Length: 182
Image (tube, rainbow, N blue to C red; front, side):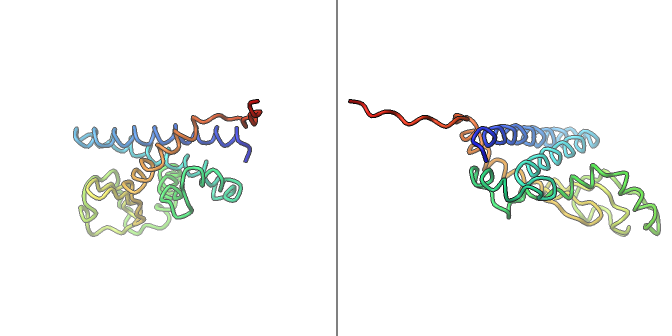
């Protein structure tokens, strides 16, 4: 990867990390204020920023994984990173497809959504009838029984963010070798 492109990617990922951290702060504030809709608005922004980071590091569905390895190596992120996962963001983004599938496959057509609390808050309905559920004590987001831990994502972002900023602030051009002093 050319050095300038590497630096631009690093800067863009650093910006997405900031957005993710801002979203985490908004989640906390809205939870304190018991504002469910704004909490899920911040959760969706968190997931979008995380997915943008993933796409920058690996490409859409891993399509640029090999060519972006140098980028991941430059900030200490490997393929086991929680940043790689985008499934939960896809659930939020493609809600129309999820609703169509739910309507076709759900037996009871219960629609349980925007839940905040422990995973056992609502017992009984089929997993397919339970859409967005956030457990703030564990950081788990659950959608149709799929779990995604936001605390792991935030911890990874907080770990790589200082390295990202340091790398992104380096020159984006190759420095010419200095001539020896006479």
